[in-house]
Image 1: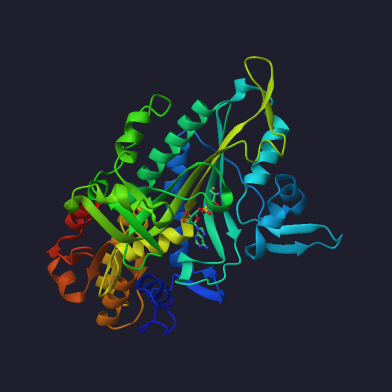
Image 2: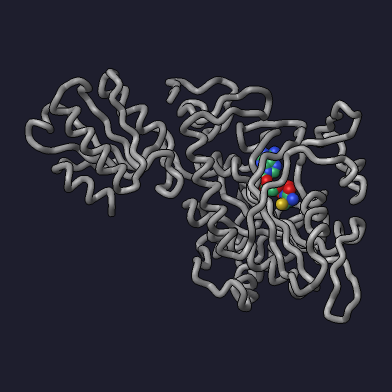
Length: 431
Ligand code: 5CA
């Protein structure tokens, strides 16, 4: 847990500063990071939330390689178009490879190898894998990296109506992901860019440091997520259109006339962090790559596709932007690197050691994945470090309390402290 007192001078935004100070990441090259123990724990927890919500919405996990064959991209026609953002590599046989910036081509190749009939549809395959884009200006730490972790899902349907149902499932699953991460995300109409297609939404977290401009109806901010208990394979159109009927657009798609037609108090212009982007693009890849399925009429037709990305590593930064104070990070319980910290203020003292070990064991048994700080540091340094790294609960054990049979329990988010017996503290933490 290599914490730093000062933020390195080149970190411009608070999340980047706090990620470096809390020892979550280490820069290895511009836009390329090593994940240190605490950072990796958070990244894995976000990944797991995303995975659970994808599975709930009927998507199936696979893992595609980071290195892809250029020939697949020649088939889709994107090899030349993608430009300088693509990292191109040659192997020892002089074959052209690339480090995948996204995986439409690879997943289409997998799909066409196995699925031949509409009876096997719908299908949605996803993976959580590192991507590389040689961004011109990598900045803000993991927010705009060159190597970054993305969840990318790809849907396959026989017709447009099916593709829209698949799109709707992802649209709502995304809202559930962000809600579980303690974030308020707004879906906005977006430009499909190099992925292509004619229907696209970005999911934005409001933050002054965001790189995107958002124009939206205020009510969208508080509308919230649908929750896990919707009928995922039923009619989701009403839930989706409740949200898409209110105005919301990124700057590329902004329509000033429509925006101005809303009541003034409902008009919101803000900066946003794009934490997800979904696309419907029909036959854009299936047609040139000949991913054909036999329809009910016996005819072969190109499958209808969409793709759905979540910026998993970017979310670490986005959550910090949305949840911190002057002392450091405030992790939502769902992704905190440790559920609770046990601070031994006098390590080596038999009484303190005994209470700490009991606390550590009980918290472990309760599934809270606790951190035990038994370093010889002075108490002030321990408090500051635990606040900085944002652990939701602190159980503070010192000689005075031990003599009286109590510990101090602190909630990081509110700063609230209470003095109580260990067993009672454990009950409060367990909720
Ligand atoms: N194939 C589609 C969806 S699967 C796709 O690549 N979409 S994307 O380009 O919009 O990327 C998906 C998400 O990845 C973005 O919404 C963003 O959250 C994240 N992302 C994109 N570029 C970067 C980057 N340079 N650094 C960190 N995260 C990024």
